[in-house]
Image (tube, rainbow, N blue to C red):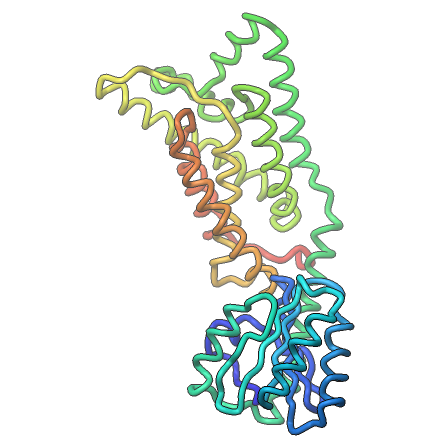
Length: 352
């Protein structure tokens, strides 16, 4: 029995891509996982073993999970033996769904989404024959949208991202190679709260093109290149540059405000440099896109990106509290980027 979407996390995320006789194929394209459901249906042992072998031998890439429906100890033994003979055993997970509705893991990797869905089988409603073609068509349509989107994004050359990276590298090379004069200019362009409130407002922007050392520069430029190219192709050059620059200013203002408060409480003034406030703005903008109601990204792209982005954000939030890190620039820039992307009217690359 194939269940209607909506029962457990597996049903919410897996796409039905094929149904043929006693076999059904589902996939999680954004996770590189596939699931084959094979109905035993009283098949002779040799025929069932041949069907299992065909499935496992056809596996080439990603993670593959096989669920045999029905049968008893004999089916369990066939599955275990077929798993041992499979060419990609390390990337397999084999299960048996008994006649009583119990899901047994026979061998290999675990698929927690499948196990969670199996616990809710009692709540499931079976798909009707008329609903199966509709679900398959939807899966193919979503894959087509994701492929077209990826192709459109790949066509664009991220010239603004490369320009920003080049400016940061050039500024670092010029200032670090100019001795005391270069350091004086660097201090003059850094984000210092006391100087900002004395009218040197350029500092809340120029600090974003300076870096403390080579490691600081390389880490930020790698992050900018990784995220910036995608967002530039998605948003277009002007909107991308607006979010980047506005986020840099937002992070600079947040740092200046926090610094002024620290000085007012008896602390020492400090200076801040780095593109991380602007980069956090790009992360905030990406988060707004994947969480927003306006469907800018194809569903498969948004789903995979949401999972990865949330993990990256959690890690970066934790790193922001380390000594020497300007968390105010991070959070200020991230908030500005999020709000700008949340409030703007955006289109997909193919529509712009």
